[in-house]
Length: 290
Image 1 (spheres, rainbow, N blue to C red):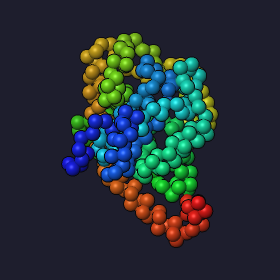
Image 2 (spheres, rainbow, N blue to C red):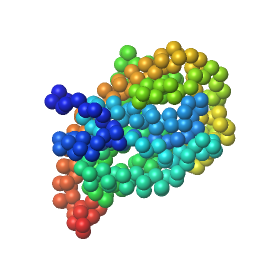
Image 3 (cartoon, rainbow, N blue to C red):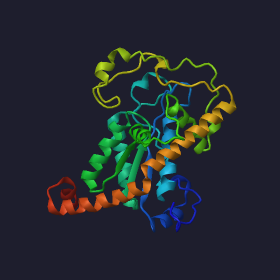
Image 4 (cartoon, rainbow, N blue to C red):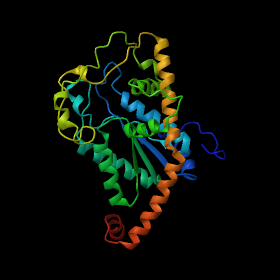
């Protein structure tokens, strides 16, 4: 948050009053949209990847003076649909729903939209939406894939950030702490989750496209997703939470959100000029016909 920005009561849009949103839009236009799932997630709550996305979005918004649109947990889950706790929507339904939200946000005045998800297959929904959204409106929205972003964190080589097999699990617990829901993470003393996936014999073909985008499949056992560390007591849970909150904080620092949203503004200006030169491009054509 910049030094000349007054502290806000909340940055989560659904918790704001309309007047607070109007006041914000008088000075800025950034909205961070976490896209989640409700799905089988080992011994963790079903909304784990929703909460990670929301916690990341909140820290991102704090870093670049943005708002956060929460409450988007029901999208394409994927291979976990064989678990009866998983809520499964089709990819196409998710694209249409998220696109309607993006168009509403644009009409409201949020011209810089950043979508973030910690769910592997989310790219099939969000990436498709942001590309169609641009062709329809000329507004370049951005999708940040958390797994890909963690690669940048690894390259940064920060000595105070532990990156290991439990990093994602620590981020999960840390996210619940950031969102004020740490007690929702159950104490887990005896976990059977984390065995080799029953779909592993097909990894040679399933790995030919990014994150569940190669072929349709379900897991063959509920223990396949996701590995869960032992959390036998509240002290261990707090240790995981503090470690995960640190990782999330450092990840947001490495992403440099003020730079990201500044780049979005510059990209939008670049594309406006491109549309003037190429009036047959879809976004220019849509604008001229409108």
